[in-house]
Length: 478
Image: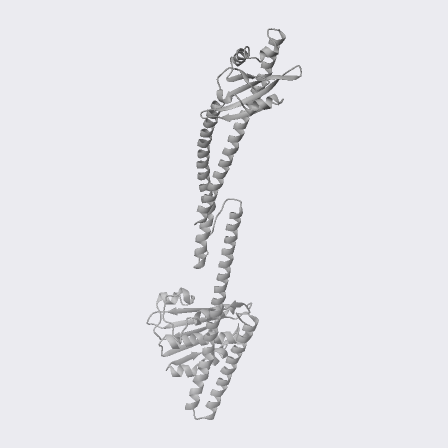
């Protein structure tokens, strides 16, 4: 059974019990009040009748014995009952009814008369077949002794009619109140259950990872506190899940970037190793060994840097700027990539002039490797022209190939994150990370990278370096 139905049934039972208790209390109180009022009224009548009877005796119209005799008692009873709504009886010291304004044979002998002759006022309620009577009996004292008594009989049928009408009205009003109370209870339970129902629906969404649902409660009560606590919990869960996704994404991108950069020295080492088998002169072999050792050292430094980064939890690319001859870095980079270029049947034309700029040599070489490897792998070129030229405040490295080029849309999104690019197959040779990383590293050094390309007309990549010192920066890998 639903909570709303339970609340409704509980309220219904409670209201019915309260109305039943009110009915019993009101009925009992009203009946008792009416009896007490009638008894008080009969008592007042007795005081008046006693005075009137004593006046008759004192006026010596009749004696006290004649007052309670069979001769005068019926007349006095009728006289006293005139203009009243109750029956008057007189009884003698033996308890015999000697005067009666009415005819109640079934009430000739009652215990109330015995109580009155014993000196007490007695009130009795009797019920017959078709009637209910209130009997009030009181002793009549004369000169210190009981000489008889007065007895009053009041018909309670009118009282019963009044009580019956009251009960009818009470039941009608109670049913109306019950109906209103039940409607109010139903509305109140709906008002209470509405935010709870909203909470239930929101919890179902939470189970499937949707934390967008918020519960609004305007009442200032525990339900409002529950709704606020749920909203806070939902926001906290959403923040923690977003942070978890952020950390996972950051770790993945860090892993992707590092593995991408580890490929370059490994490729060079493999290329020079292949060349050694084809060389006969010892000087050429030694030169290859120098580059193998150099690239191995660079690979080891990258691994050590990765380990330090993992231990410190510092996942950032940092640059250390120094004034360096860009021509030497460019020449050395082309020499390291020579086996790969030779294997791909790509000829190179190099034009360099000495040009000192502020840069990080390792990061610059990393950028050059990425750019030239992209040309080797993706442009289908046979000729690669590399030119270093000096301008007023910059040194520019222009790397031009005669490959297939790119259309305008592909060129425009070249430096966008992979998630924002049109879907394209990702192979073992390409992960879509190199150029974005190149742009970030160039900007960290105060430089820039631009790409110009036309479909079918080759591609030109321009690297710009500052000749004036710039403030070094760091970039989080994600």
